[in-house]
Image (cartoon, rainbow, N blue to C red; front, side, top):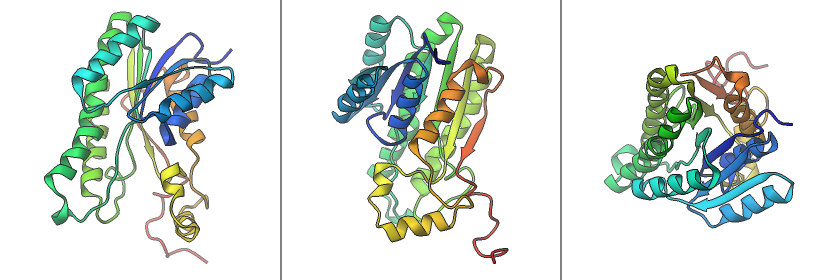
Length: 256
């Protein structure tokens, strides 16, 4: 029996990448997992998880559309009776020089990375308050909170906002037996990252003390811990998972 047996989890951006890794880990630990995504691939991912003997259910949803999010949340609550775990994973990242960022590109980042988290949390939190139990996990990033690369202003701004949102909401709902934490990934080998040339991937790995990129399964394992009662005294916390990539003060000093 897994540490999430009997729990119902809702994971956004779950069709692939970190979201898929999180959904798989939660399902493996016994949770009934609802995978939400804009892509039809979410059904394939859910079916694949089910084929391994776990509980998964795919649903189409755009996190930027508040009414749609509310309707999906209500339908899932009717179907499964409750939602114990919410993982706000859906997000986008498009690099662009600050002075070339259009209002549309800026708003797209804000709509998905900030308003998406806001919309999903407002839709599901009332059920958690009613049952006096809940686990909310927001996927942020080391970008914006700890480090940043050029041309990442829109993305960095939104991920830093998720950090603040996490702490503020954690304070607000602490007395209701609801924890709110965030995961701050570094370089993770998602399908999008895998599209880069191998030389680029090798260069990225060379700047990481552990010498490799992270796996989506490792993000999933951390999410499963935060979603379980093993983390019952942790709230308002952002956990870095980056293989040590944010540790070096410089990229050259101290190397042999």
